[in-house]
Each structure stands twice: as C-alpha cells, then as structure tokens.
Length: 104
Image (tube, rainbow, N blue to C red; front, side):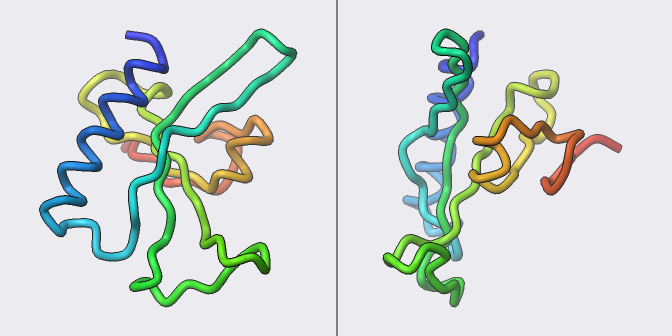
C-alpha cells in the first residue's frame, strides 16, 4: 500500500471513532499533503484539536492546532506516528523531533 492508501484507511478509521464519540478532544480533517521538489508527494491522515480541548487558536484566525497521523513510517499493525502538522510539513520524521513514537 502506498501513503495515499494509508492516509485513506487511517482517516476512515478515525472517522468511525469520531462518529462513536471516542474522539473527545480532536476532530478528523481531510488528509494533508506535503510536496517536496515538485514530484515527491506524501499524504497522512490529519486531526485538529476541537474546542472541547480548551485549545486556543495558534494562528490568530481561529484555527486550532493540527496534527498528522502517519502510519507510513512503521510496519503494518504498529501504532501510527502522531506529530504536529507544522513539523511534518518541514520534513521531520518520527525520529527527528516532537512526535509520539510508538516503538518500544
């Protein structure tokens, strides 16, 4: 499966959790896209903090913090990496900086 397939599958799973009321502090957004050198595209699922989380706008325009949920970095069946959208857009990976790294 490529990253598009991973992003779609992860987004669908997150939407199921959202519909069942299991995402109290986040909302599911459309998958994000990162473009490098005009030909290298990568897609992860994306979530944003909901107003229930007590979060404040991080850009002064009402947008709350956003995160990517990227299962591409690890073997199938392993938890996905969750990291801030801004860090991911700069090309960071789970090994580079601030993210949830599920590896033991």
